[in-house]
Image: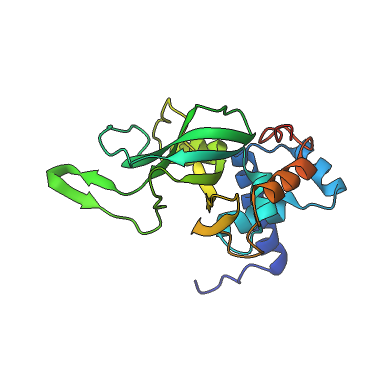
Length: 217
């Protein structure tokens, strides 16, 4: 607009920092967590900014910011349930083993989907939804906190079942190696296998209560 100057670099940095702080709170991190991580030379503000911009986040950063990491078996997409959270369907998974967070073996976790049936027999398909193969095992790096924030922002109601937004999803091969997909990180090397993920989680455990600690290995 005429007569108004463009924001300065300082103003832009302040705005980005403010947004990152809101996102961090949405992920379940507090100001004290930021301090603890900063002492370990880890910048949570920068990590959160890049996570929500969906650019240049490494697998280790995703593991740190996630509140739930599980090995789980995929099932068929559930499109029959009428949802209250604004999503149209969800993919259920049965937890085989929990690596981080409050889930336990045998629990069901859901990854919500924007794709699904609409009224008048119309089907909405969103390409960003993750497609998995029922019966196969996957490493799921998830954020329940992020799901609840998204639902709150749209003035909807969270589902009573455990739903979470996927940050990373890797198919697990028979020998425990991780295959690069269906949702791999945009930067950094794909973790080699489950053991390397466990090692990363162990190195990060105990720093904060935001996402729960890695399980004992």
